[in-house]
Length: 124
Image 1: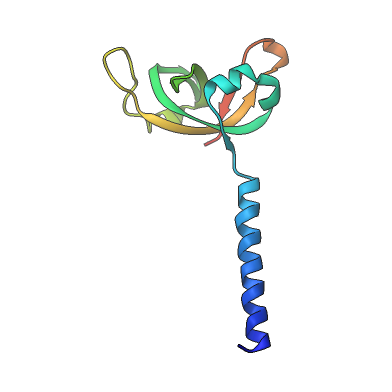
Image 2 (image 1 turned 90 degrees about the vertical axis):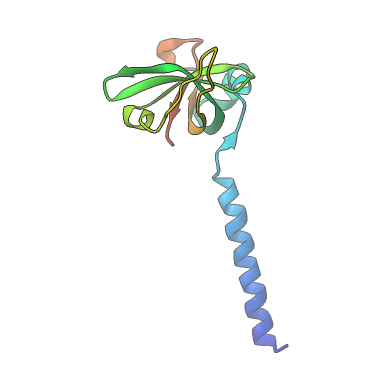
């Protein structure tokens, strides 16, 4: 193999590795709801992902809404755009299963105006 071709292959592998590792650095960490609740200071103002079943019903507040998410470790209220709730078909209750969703958002565990309350604001 010629030296020039070998250099191009090695450089391509290096850039592929760089792209793969850098994209992981910016990915939101997936956590359980219980981890968020028990470690509010650790996750305060960080972008994380939670996954679980949508339960109850959407509580509309102007252009936004609260939904409840249960991941079997715990449940949490999620603040999101009202338009995002239109994608939800089923809300779980004692006799029915709700949609399973993965929500990425900003965990605000130490909001000054609401001491002791964990707020999760959805961004996607």
